[in-house]
Image (tube, rainbow, N blue to C red; front, side, top):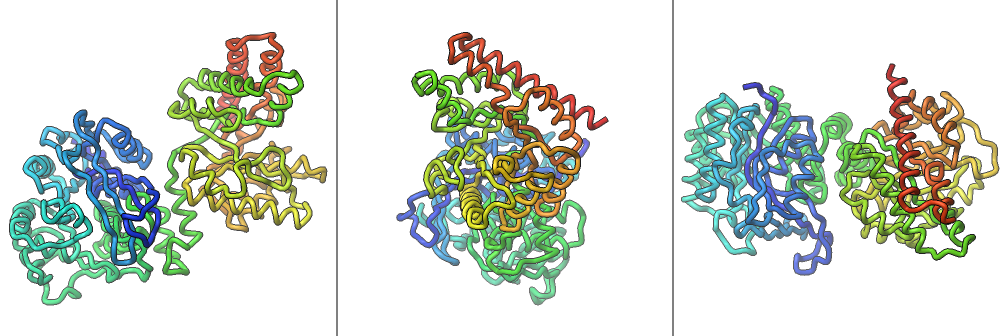
Length: 638
């Protein structure tokens, strides 16, 4: 069978609810962040981020949490064909907290959960056989049905000559040792668990564990004695001993008289923030090297670096580095032991692990507020008409895009709340304004505390902020604008939202040339502000586009790109601008509004056209612009 995957992981998948109040008891937590959890799920995501082709075999519930896991796995590039939806059981949950550098309380909610009910028939033989390696975890041998499921997968892998990797992953409470409040406990000696694990070891090519996990597998609290017992049970296996801040030691032959005589991988001097998930990230880094046939010392280096990066952050799966990020860390290191405070590394982590893959966005913008409020006021109509019109605009967007992955909208929550809510789950990219309309200096519609406002926004809403700014503005005004944008950027990063920064220089009354906007962009980058998207006026020529490109490439090569704004330009002029923009890869689409809805709005407010006609008119123009963009890109490619 053709090998199409690097690794298939099998076992636990859960939703981790992480307490956000660091330093407090779980009893006192007021809010939680939601992440994918479970050792095999974390490793599937971690390896995918590092460029391996991974898949997960597990079960999830037929409910919102199960769908969250599946969707997040796909977002991270994991093959989910082995994820079984259990119609009768709920997805597992874990409640976690960060008490201090040594205490990380957690509660497992796994009573009759979906992944604990896995059966041998859940294992797809073709999926296992298509991978270079199968990863199994000790926890998923703790019940008869899970033991049978894991052993079947191992038998399939062995029959096809695939490598089998065991992460001992010892959690006493999941073996029925201790009460519900002992989830944090990492080691309790148990002879029956040791015998059980030793029956698994002969089938493994790699065995990975902490010292405590090697102790349980070897049946001894003396590390060298435990290692020798593991070696007896698995004479040909590579044994990887994780030693936390001291790095790791690998043994590919007889166990020596001293741990230091193995193949050592030095740890990295970083400050521990959260140990939960570090082992899964370690395994991901190890597998990146091991399955690419790197020397064992290099495998250890990858593993230790991944563990160090993750141990410095909040959460398990979302903390794992991308391959680009890992390479940068290994090449350049960090000026601080508190890696989560390394702005360069954090920006690289964000930009290479974004929530949504998005090559381009072709958006219909109807987030306008003042313009529409003036239109209805001129006619003496109720303001509620605006909300209805925005729903018609959404209908037009859905009709014109017809499921295209690059379709999008810009819509506000104050006047377009129903349209915004209806857009959820449609597949449209959603941008949402936060600025108070037409304000100079910039002000936020929800008040100065934009972080509190964004906590209420869905994560798939991209924060759009329009700033009227010219590089030659009065220094005092410029300082206020920059401070506001910096505040917003920080809030977006803390809440996990992407930022689209729209810059308009032409309304300042000052002369504008092809360098005006690039100068504003460069200034924001110099301040450490890295928008995910820029929304800009069309430059006059290729020189302007080159200047924009140069700024982005120099400061943020992982920026998503530039969206063209329309400023109510005639359609023929927009089509001309597409032909120019399409020649420059930094331009990734458009976000155009009044050029699409202007005439339909007037006709609808005046009663000359009805709902259907207004929506159809907007869908027609929007569709024509999409087609024009497609033609421009095709011509540029030729």
